[in-house]
Image (cartoon, rainbow, N blue to C red; front, side):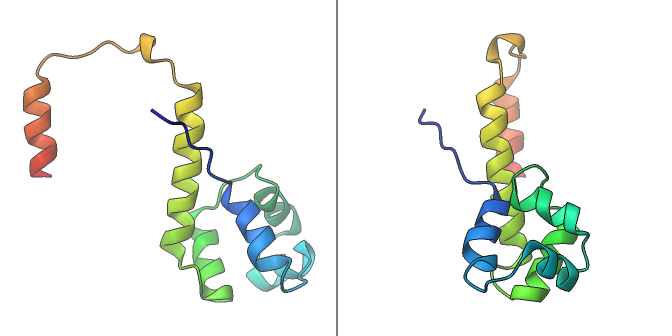
Length: 106
């Protein structure tokens, strides 16, 4: 399976929204109602985009919408987890056919 390395959504925020508008982290943080430290950690990939931050970004920039910010964060987090995951530490459980039916019904 090919491993994807999606960008942290903070990088997208920095490169696609802040830089083109010539917004500083300080100015954007103030407009978003966040501390400079919080926004700096997000745009530098050290902190995640939370649902609260996603809603603030949606209100400030309109697009992308909050759910897209959260999907980007989920994709980033899942890719990072896949890189770190050790499949050998997990034992398969019996009853996979039943699990498949349950998942199909969900």
